[in-house]
Image 1 (cartoon, rainbow, N blue to C red):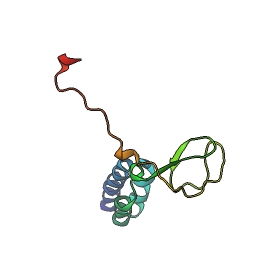
Image 2 (image 1 turned 90 degrees about the vertical axis):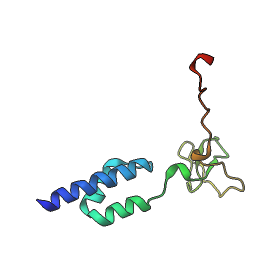
Image 3 (image 1 turned 180 degrees about the vertical axis):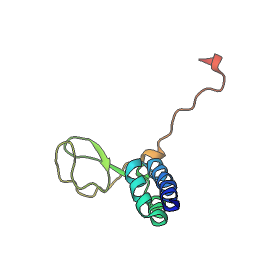
Length: 103
């Protein structure tokens, strides 16, 4: 019974970390629950999708991650670009005005 409680706690923690990093909660819940300590460490070490460089497909213009080999929209084979697009995490969100009456 103690192992089940431990596995569920590690599963929830791993699922939450995976979800924050842009992956599937359920996938990381199952991994972290099956192998409690190592699964959580793997979820922590997993890359953050929003921090990956991007590129535009030369045929259809769809923006994809730089590590993609094929465009998922048109099927074009992608070569490594000379210039990359900044990651999503670098894009600035417009600031809200401090005074709500100024709108």
